[in-house]
Each structure stands twice: as structure tokens, then as C-alpha cells.
Image (cartoon, rainbow over all chains, first blue to last red; front, side, top):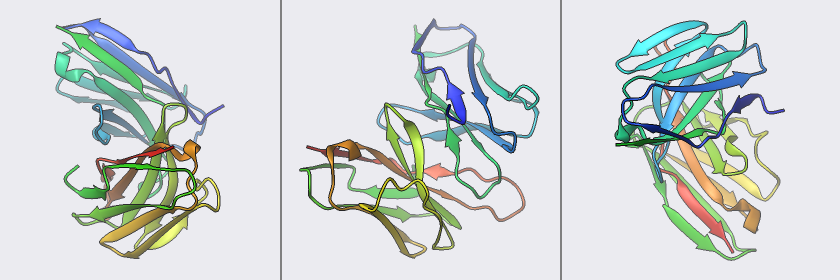
Length: 111
Length: 116
């Protein structure tokens, strides 16, 4: 079993829909939880990060971390065609260590 | 992508040839990471450096892979000899951890390697 599990999708939604993306993990030492967005043929870009448990909101995006369940989520409200990309969850134990990534969920938002 | 330059962007080679991938960080950093991305395995760490010193190379698949960081502005990942299963996108990423808060890892645009 991989340390981080993520449903690869693909996920197709109409414009304006609420999108929920999720990851589960097994390593209880993870403290930093990130969501990266990767457009086709580009490098991943950090979308949001959360330290330890809790929620974080940034515009249309909300990240949630539940360490007791080893479960993280990313919600996208009012999804737009420009949100079409692959979303990767990533985690690390410390700030200066390698990230452990999920395989990514491919999202397509149709207008 | 602005913080990291990778070259070449695309590489097609034949099995058995030597391949050298290059990474040139533009902005400040104290960590440099090499990752590999495939459809089957996703994005995985190969090796990372702290202040130019290799810290963890446990992700390097085998002795055919080697990485160097001769200075803070340059790193290479070499595959010799290359095999078709090495076909993947190779990313270089940098991170600066000073300041007490989390700083993101900036990824380069990647090198798409195809070994025939």
C-alpha cells in the first residue's frame, strides 16, 4: 500500500459545480499537507498548504485536514473551465524533506 | 516555473545511451529535489540535496542513476546506460526553508525523456 492514496479519476463536472478531491494516508508523522495543481505539460504549482489539522480557505478553494482519520480534502466552489487540470495531494513530515505525492486526480470542467 | 530552468525540455534517445538532465535554480534556495513522474507510479522522489550535499538518495532506482550538485546554481541527473523503463518526466524542484515558516517547493517545467 502506498503511503498516500488518491483516486485518479478522471472527474468531469459542469461549470459552476462544487468539486471534492480527497486523499488518505498512512504515515501519522506527516505534518504538512499540500495541494498542487498541474496543467498539461507543466510542472506542479502549489495551490494550498495546511500545517497539521484544520481548514484553510482561499477564494474558491478550501483545504481540510483530519489527522485523526488520516484524510485530507480539497473543495473547489463554482468550478471554472480554467480549473481543468490534475490535482495532486502531497505531504511531508518536515519543511525541508521530500514530498510524498498522491497519483493525482484529473479534473475536467465543461462550460 | 520561473524559479527553475531545466534542460533539455524533451529528450529522445536509444536504449544504452547516456542521458544527462540539467537543473538551474534561479531564485534562492537551500534544498534541491529531483522527482520522476510516470503514469503508473505518479510523482516520486529520486534524490534531494541540502546546501549542495546529497541527503537522501533512496529513491534512485539503481546504480545507472547518479546526481550531482557542484554548486548552488546547478545540478545534473545522469542515466547511464538508459533503458526504455526510464521514460518519464523528470522534475527539479527547489525550496528555501529559512524564516521559520513553510516555503513551497517550486517545480521546474520538467524534462520529458523517451528511451526507445
